[in-house]
Image: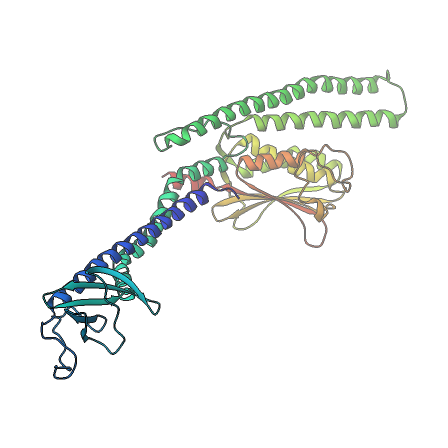
Length: 453
């Protein structure tokens, strides 16, 4: 996955690690050169400080070692020759090194490299030698003592890089969260303020331009649907009235079944146009007109509106309350009165349509903490579990559904619930008979007043 964060972190951390490695090598070579200069000075000091009577052999003080004044140890090899080139002193039992010219030289013996310094004195030649490995070991120790602050700095710098990159990309995350929090109907421009970095302003401006074009196209689509539904509603209503008048005065003759099918299809078409008009109206409202409304009063009004339709099918339609809701509780909520009434009517109408004659439908008011809701419970056939996830889609009607319909009733209810930030859940009743449409999330009006106070 291509990620700006990973790319930045990768380049910064790898670059810092490479720079630290180069700095470490440079420090090591610097320490090695300084150690070499220090040891060269030590070799020269030892060679010049050796006593003139230092000899090896019969009559010489063999056990007496020269005083190096703290600058020499057993890692230094000393050889002295007389004026004629004969060896007169050797500091160890190992074979002496070959004599080299005056000054500093590097030689190899038995796969060991030695650094030598020779000086010609009045009656003798002094050569002092030291293994190169001793110098490298000391250089490594000096480098390690020098590098430990750098080793401590590396993880601190990596943490700083992580924090800086995270803070630098925070505006991108904030912009993503702002876009993700928007609903499909919020197509207004993003507001530019001082917190938006200059680098993101072209992106925000391009998004605002895209949102403006999408808003224009969406508005044109909603206007077309609303206009088409409005234009169709009037002639369809007139056609229905003409059909009813012709049936009454006997000017329309034909088979009763044929005229009944015409009336049924006409009613279905009128309902479809009405639902399209309702859906277009809901989609066309960018903002929710919130007002104080009594959920109990809306419920009682919905029960009264559908009482005749329920009586025609001999369905027992009633209003109930579920504790802690009481009989005298008005259940005041803050919502769009028209939208909430449409939501109630669609769920009740859907329940009446699919509940068989002689059935029962209960509209139950519920409360959970500061949240109010309602449930429409029927004892109809319910919905197969495999269709529960799709019946809220527009124009979806499963093969199990009897009767006529357009598949828009539940989708309109779902759209209204989404605009109110409510939860609409369909579930089959226990026992396998009936369906419950539960709506939850309406905030009580008294709790809103307490928050504002």
